[in-house]
Amino acid sequence: MNGAPRIAYIDFMKCLCIMLIVMYHIDHEFFNYLIPRLNDALQAFRLPMYYFISGIFFKLYDGFTDFTRRKVNNILVPFVFFIVLAFVVRWLMSIVLHAMGSDVIDASPIELVMPFYMRYWPVTTPLWFLLSLFWVNMMFYLLQQWIKPWWGILFAVVAISVGGYILAANRIYLPLMFDSAMVAMPYFILGWGLKRLGALEKSRWDCWGPLVLIIVAVPVYYLSEFMNLHFMVLPAYWKLYLLPLVAITALFWACKNLPRIPVFCHFGRYSLIILGTHPLFFLPLRSLFILRFGMEPGIQLTLIVFVLTMILEWPTIWLLKTYAPRFTAQEPFFKSGWKI
Image (cartoon, rainbow, N blue to C red; front, side, top):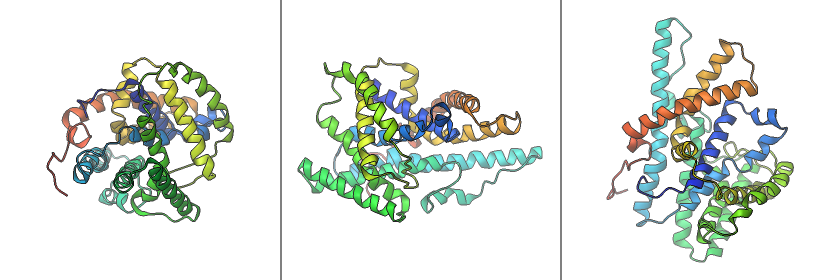
């Protein structure tokens, strides 16, 4: 992880994703305040791009045990850690507020197990994505083992996504976000496929990326509909995939032209920590500005809370990667040789 060379434009894409996600969580209508229906267009690639990036770095490693160990270390261990961290923080805050005579925060131990049997849970809900990403990786690993031709893998991924789409259409939800993982498979295979085609390498065609992104942005904006992979609210099947795949490819192409921007690359590199901790900052900050300062939801409130949240994330990243590296995917929690 730390020893692997960093790809600056990939870190920038991860930073863009997490910043858009944080803004959306602060106020779901923020982007629509700027431009009507902009949020629908951004949803076409905002979260799918994370699956895409994971697909880029997919490897079989040294067999099923080693692969599983790495995915447990990089995905499930942080998932559990951030749930426990959020509970501890809320529990400590409840003690402080009780001592001050203020309204006490409800910090029930039930919050520690809710993510394992519910689709929505307080504070750490954004972590649903990690469960989904884990299953995507595991399913794709098995497909790689069982199916050898690339076209066979592609056919299987489409079949799995159709199955997930049918489940969503009939409001049938599978535990631990497995249905969301089924629907997300095509985004993952796009990253895997582009890497196989050598798209990560610099090319003389890269200069056309920004122009292609501008051209693609128009149909993506006008054709996109609301989608939510968490609660499986999906648009028409072709919109669920054609628009995101085109938008992600164009954005990837355009970002290859960017120079290394240290701050953005830093946030992108540690976007997992931001994903797991940003609710701990923006929720109290937003409540503070609304209840104490009388601010109304809108562009100004969202931007203030967003900037303060990202400022607080900087020392948080340093603290967690320094003192909890094994819990935040900076170092392996289970060492090589671990058995299932």
